[in-house]
Image 1 (cartoon, helix red, strand yellow):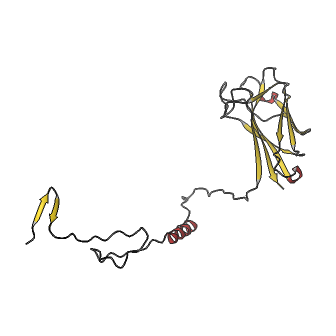
Image 2 (cartoon, one colour):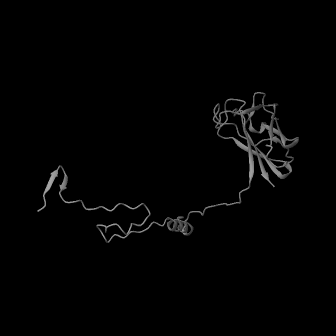
Image 3 (cartoon, rainbow, N blue to C red):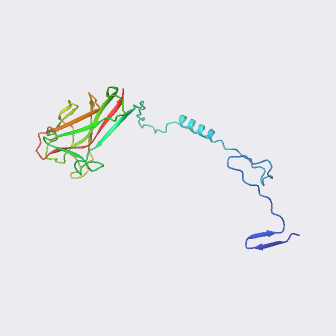
Length: 223
């Protein structure tokens, strides 16, 4: 008869312990020299992550649309990407109104402003590039002044690209960071290494009325 000693919930025996096979490394089959596992019916299945990855991709390709009856179909686009370079100029002349920076430049009626964009030296010749200028603008927060009284004259490298009334709204909320800025986009007909943007506030509004400019961006595309 075997003699056992008990200590708490752990049982001690004078017989040698049953050997426990070590766990093989993850993803490796067990060694054939190890003793039989306690449950012979369990069969080792090797991991094949590449197979699962392929199945997942095939599932995505064949996945049916879950569109409900009567819902409109999606309207999608997948145009070829156009390589280019963007040069951003954050305008910070006045510490208010801009969004999200909080800063913006201001042109009062009759004011004239000049901004420059110098192309980096590593870019190809301007003749091999196509450019456009983006200007984020808005009117002042003076709702008593008709919006049709505001006008701009914009020239790039001496060529006027915009003259007359501008389709902008009065900034809201009044006195805070405006949320209704609009982006004005114009092509650059004569791109140079050193580009000069001149904007004149040609409004017929009062001398204390103004047009705000949040930022400008020069976009260059390879041709």
